[in-house]
Image (cartoon, rainbow, N blue to C red):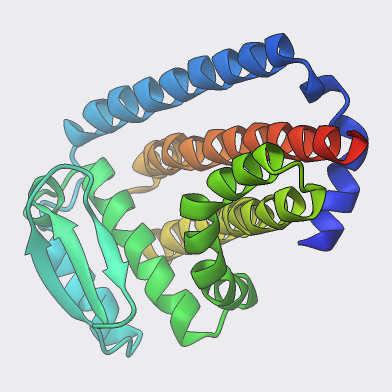
Length: 241
């Protein structure tokens, strides 16, 4: 956390201005809306395009799990785009729209979650780092802004900086999440292509679905960086008093 704060320290002068902070938040919000729109439109487009095999995603998932000896469970979950892998229960949850579908989008999402399963199996270093940071990041996302504010009220630069370091853990968590998600997507494409589960002409469609989803993580990381810079600027202002 200290390294992150030290690395971005030179950028905080710009974010000492409230107007610049608001402008940055506005820009990130627009990027977020664009990313979300891209996810929905891309997913919708390739949800209507068959993979060419006519096999439901859950059956493909079962075959991949068996072939690769992944040893995880598979279940259907409610909601849309609620697909996930829970390493504690070792169960992959596929949303209703994915579970019984043979679309390019369904296959891409399903294989992405199995990519996460393989990461845990292979002890993929970034995911181990992310899991180690998680408790501090959860604390930081909730408490850090309040600690910085209390530090400002009490005119305590030290307390304010504690809040900044905690929030730096949130940024680090999201930063490490990027290679985790990109790697899971790469594994997904390999699983689908090498296993012959998707026709070659549809591979580009699966990549587009996964890239659109990954863009939301990039924007989220940028938003957290903006907030971190603002908190650091406020903490430095407290130190100057």
